[in-house]
Image 1 (cartoon, rainbow, N blue to C red):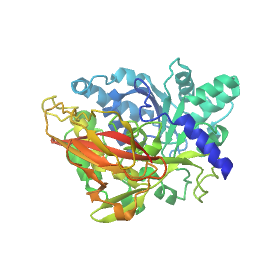
Image 2: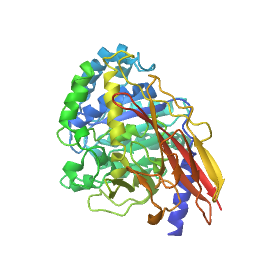
Image 3: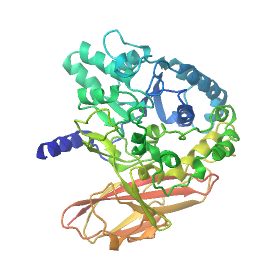
Image 4: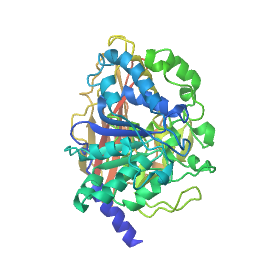
Length: 479
């Protein structure tokens, strides 16, 4: 046990770079998708494109999966990009930096057409696997995020070739640049990747075997919309992930791009948490999944074997952990709650962005700017009064701003006792005075050792739909 703890600690020290750790510039992203398997991948791709100005999109790769064994659906990616091209000139009126249709088509690649490990090894290179290698070899120090919406064997083939053909130092350097966020294990190549490359940064709810669908019920990403299918306790609003919501907010408001958004068959946008984790909204820190974001919250450990795993995990991975959210006086504790707690803000954000495809700047809503008058990391003593100041916050549309300060209990180290809990709506406010004002204060608790407390500022505008942005304040409380 002590050896395992030392390994986890060492990995945390390597991966943790603090709240200001976002690399300079945009995130580099490659998406691997089993699109055409069901509507969810197409749904997620459309939402992904409405955020594309935030990132350097370096690949859209069609792959197989457990649901799509011997074919790939790259033609569907091109169809959606055609629709995107029709609204691109309107999107850039709202935010600069949206990539052109022509550029995005240039990074659409075909992955292998075999299933799982049958497509990994000598002679199994594909356009997609070669493209991943070429992106990793670019002289760019930024990490490459590979988002697995389907099977992982195209990534596995790239890693196999790197391992087989490159000197150890170059191999290790390229693998150190990789960051993977997988929507479960949709083929048997995923556990091979994790075992073969134990230092690879990997976020996943592991497992899932064909015929054993209950494995999905235990996945964090289900919190995006999947409670009705997997019957987990949730206090989330289900009306805003319904087909009626799609009709009213996406089809009716999104022009040619919104028209490509298919109605949900099973789970709405099950792949979206992988990139919601990377949305620059002031909440998430990409290399600290344990901090929590719109993409959920994860901690680094070796999970216990479950029957729906492909095989036992042998190394720490970023995987499921629970949040507690209180709704109407009822406490919900689950890994899915780490996502659905943000659902209203997530859906409002998409509803506003799809309108950018058709509306003028003056007629659309844009997110507020949450800004602090002080550092995001503060060191205080037990019993000290701390002042928070978000008065520099603003709104590009001139909307009125609503402020909400609360404690995000789970990411920190300090344990809040039940008799100390003070709840406002769904949030713990404890003793935050002025928690609905731009300037608030907080009395640091008495501690016997250094503790870390996370305070979240939500700034929500009065536009339609109302949009939210965040700042995170980390308090280091000393005795």
